[in-house]
Length: 122
Image 1 (tube, rainbow, N blue to C red):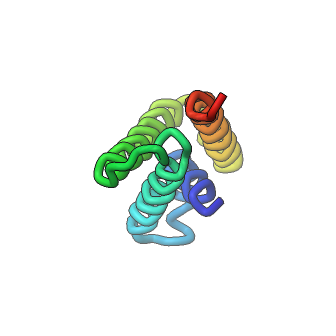
Image 2 (tube, rainbow, N blue to C red):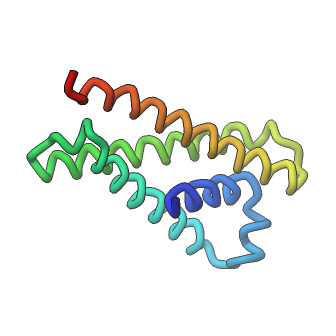
């Protein structure tokens, strides 16, 4: 839950950085949101059945960190590219940011559910 909130706030920060600077004028907020998203995403992936079956801890950590990083950085790239398409209106940008983060998270979880379904005993 906290990871999803960090991820959504990271999206808001990408779409409307001026709004987020009102809460924290330092750029550290971006780093904190990115860090908590990456750590939370990595822990989430490591607990999924398709990675839980991996016995080699180093490989499990590598795969979970890699997956979380690719998802997060891919999202940042998508938000950076779509930001120019959204009107320069803070409420509209916040709705676009939160909405897109929810869609991306739900899509990612659905994708993982399909992968994990192959790991369940038949």
